[in-house]
Each structure stands twice: as structure tokens, then as C-alpha cells.
Length: 79
View 1 (cartoon, helix red, strand yellow):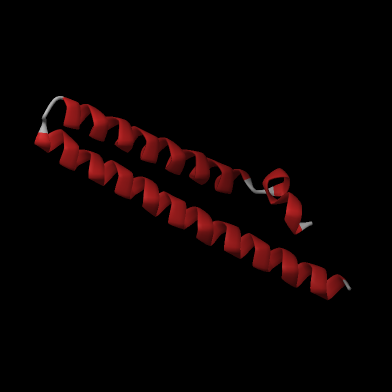
View 2: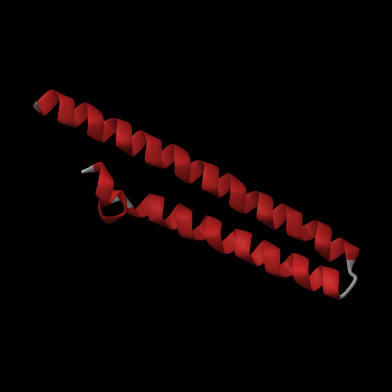
């Protein structure tokens, strides 16, 4: 059951995970562009985008933890 979490994960978890990955990747791309263009403001702005991605990642961990706890509680009541 728990080994196949992605197959049974809620859509909200999947959306948060993919959004987090996209924001982190976008932030890295913006940072690389800012560094190559020697644009310090753009490089610092990319840190906010990466930070938002990391916050979404943390939210995904919380969502996953709640779902696992719920499944464990339900399986212990059945057995």
C-alpha cells in the first residue's frame, strides 16, 4: 500500500509537487540568466522564486504525511 504512494496520491499532492519542481527549475534558470547577464537584481529575484518552490515542496511533504497517517489509521482500524 505505502510502496505505491504516487499511484494512489491525491491530485492536490501531485499538483503541489509539480508546481514546486517547476518553480525551483524556473528559479535556477532565472539565476543562471541573471548571472550570465551580470544582472544582480535578477539573480536576487530568482532566490524568491526558488524559495517559493521550496515552500511548496514543504507543503507537499505535509500533505503526504497527513495522507500516510490517515491511511495507517484506516488500515489499523480494519485489521
